[in-house]
Image (cartoon, rainbow, N blue to C red; front, side, top):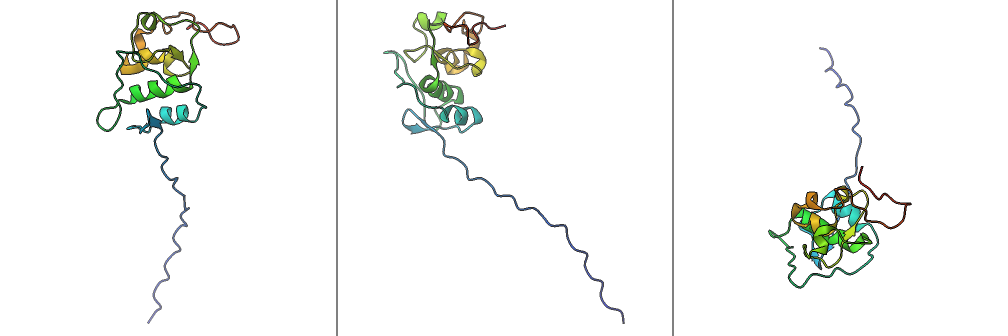
Length: 142
């Protein structure tokens, strides 16, 4: 009788540690209903201001009510740069927030009020209007 064949060694598997999921940021004192990359990137920035709403402004947040774009706009209003002058829609009183805020490199240069509700394409900053006062930063959309 012959000896049973010895099993060939199985390839060693690398153990990868899964990162624990991070808690979603707080949006208007309620955990965000979305936890996407944009919200995480915005939440990592220092807060610059308190978000204030227009008298007729409503903000939908919470389970089943919040849209990712609305939560992004709220958080961006808290951490972004105040525009030196308002875009056309903010100047006309549109949007839920009292301030016209932008962050270079986010939302294709649209302000937070226009980004709210997924309407960033209407923002006059996206159309090439100047929103910063100094020439060290990007001022015009190419």
